[in-house]
Amino acid sequence: MRKILTKKFFERSALEVAENLLGKYLVRKIGDKEIALKINEVEAYDGFEDKASHAHKGKTERNKVMFGEAGKWYVYLVYGMHNMLNIVTGGKDYPAAILIRGGEGVSGPGRLTKFLKISRKLNGKIASFETGLWLEDRGEIVNKKKIKRTSRIGVDYAGPIWAKKDYRFMLSD
Image (tube, rainbow, N blue to C red; front, top):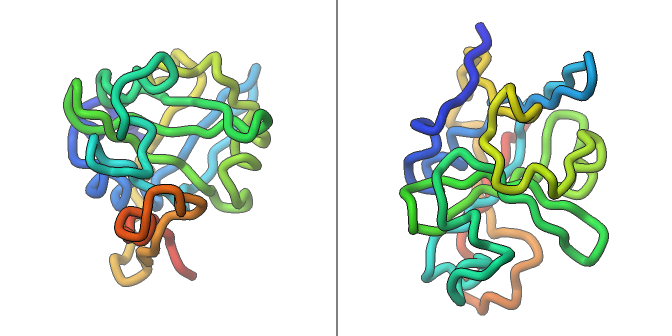
């Protein structure tokens, strides 16, 4: 069973969506080829208070997608060389998103976007078959005992409280 996740799936809290994305599939269509990776690592960025979030200091040209509709891609460049793939969650005007950090066989958000040929052209686009990048539920049940929560990676700038929040979700073997 392949079911494309719709806007309704993403219109929930970032933490809830982050946990629920584990075991779902990130699917990329390139030409006639479809590549599907089971998501095994994500990070949540949740609202104005979250000092690790791009939205913490308000709306900018770069982060405006986070303030929009749930279910849209937020793709940005980091270190001048890696595209980061996020999916917007929650309600309009509440900036929250999930960074997709890894999929089965591909570890790390920069490697993931390179492997799937994801560019900033997808920024602001809806996650759908039409855009060539979407998320699917393939009916697999994730055992909650296999979900590990840790602090996010590379967000020390957010200060001790926000840097240590357990907003990183991983599937353990």
